[in-house]
Image (cartoon, rainbow, N blue to C red; front, top):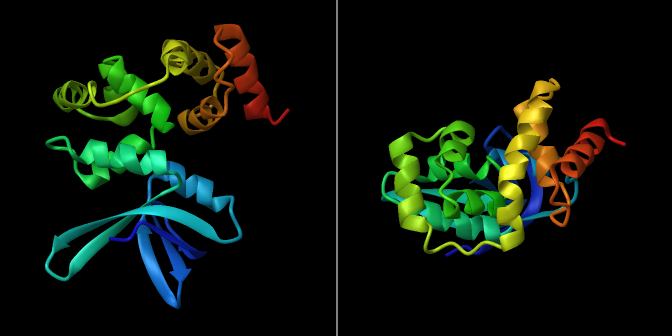
Length: 191
C-alpha cells in the first residue's frame, strides 16, 4: 500500500497531476479542489494516496491534500453506487467538514444541486454515512448560513467556483450572515 507520495509536480491536468518521486513520474488522480490547491505550490508536494486496482496489472492512484480528505474519500466509496470518480466530484464541492455536515444534516439539496448527485444516490449516501460521520457543532451551525451566503454572492455576479473558494476560507468562529458575507467579499476582492 502507498500511504503518501512526495515529490515535484511535473505535469498538471484538470483532474490529474504527475508527481516525480524517486526517478518515477506517478500519475495521480485528484479532485478539482486539490488540483487548484496544488497549482499554488511550486516546491515539493505531499499527497496522501489511495491505490485502487481496476484489473490485473492496471491500477489507479488517487491523491489528496489532507488526511481528512482521504478518509472522507474512503467513506464515500464504501457506499453502493459511489465510485472513485463520483467521490472525487463530491470532494470538489467543498471542504471535508462542509461535505460531512451536509451528509450528517441530511442536506439532499446540497448534494444534488452542488455536487450533482441524483436524489436517490444522495439519500443513499445520507442513510449509509450519517451515523459514521462526526462533525463539529460549530460547522453544522454555519452550514445553512453558508448556503444563503453563496446565494447572495451568486446574485452579485460571482461564479460558483469563486464563491466556493471564498466560503472555504471563512473564519468558522463567525456565525452570522452579514459578517460571513463581508468576509467572503473581502476574500473575493482581495482586500
